[in-house]
Image (cartoon, rainbow, N blue to C red; front, side, top):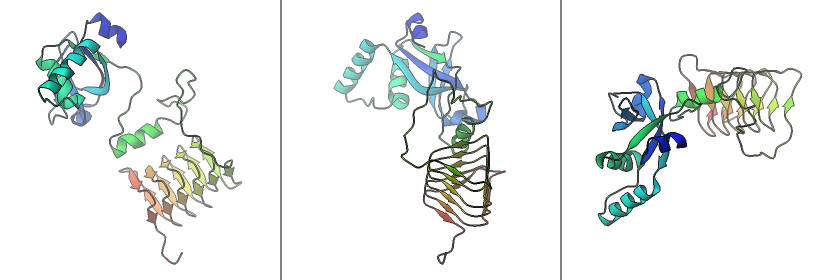
Length: 243
């Protein structure tokens, strides 16, 4: 990207990624000419003219950026937002603004569906995001928790299990965050379970996001086959006050 910025003698280069047309209205969209020079910027357009979505990654020519910010401050012009203010100001001034097409992995998790997809893409053999790539490590919080306990009644397949989990059920193609409890006979498939959640006996969860500290009662069925299901933080489902 930096080399592309230099080659184009650009004042500003914006990293872009082609997204499905049906999702383009969620993003800032860059319309370019044949040389990838940006000629128009549309912030979350209802009818997008292209599918080049801004990734929110920029390279600026520092002297020009500083000059524009100083002038904006003198004239009381708001330049606090890249999409709303900075990029339009560059285009209006006739600056050389270019798009750089990124071809690696990137995911915007601004919707429930995309958040679920990002987690599912992290696990399995043919995952889009390779957690085993030593040249591109993903660092996370180190939970101080006891080792996982997986009972003799359990079955775990294609899943990521974080420290402190107690498993006495079946887990298939899912992520269990730290200190999740799965009671006897429970089943989780294609789901993301956040820290400290408790899954009751014989509960069945499919294609869902279960929030931190949530409690799912015995025999509860959460089925996201048609639409990803969400249980919020500390939410209690299927447990009476007497239990």
